[in-house]
Image (cartoon, rainbow, N blue to C red; front, top):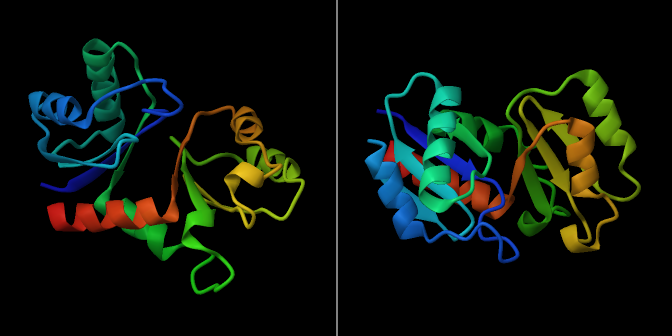
Length: 182
């Protein structure tokens, strides 16, 4: 039974979409998802499942959260293997000038077209570095996200898709949890 990482968008951010992790784990168990474990309060859940269709499973999770918590955050699922690939393909690996807390990975539902990639790159006014790799975007914010002139809401509009982001420390921790769960 493979490990799957669930990333919820916009949970417990700025006082919105509040949810406690214990009821979230209970909800996952009610969906017959095995050994759900959460990481921090921002909607990261690692669990095991034999589900073959992750898109269908994501919809099922989103609907159950809507019924249980009163809102439906976007749900992005990645297998442990997918997350291992995300880490292995980090375009900033080995660079000493890239701090872990200044590297963010945006997880997308699908691989954006070349036209969309060009629109996103055109938004970048400053020192941020953007690298696309399949369904992920790696962004280095050398001055931190809060100091950046690169608007993530503008990125979302250019993508014409939702996404959820995690800093590099969280990505590494989720991979560690997924590998321990597998």
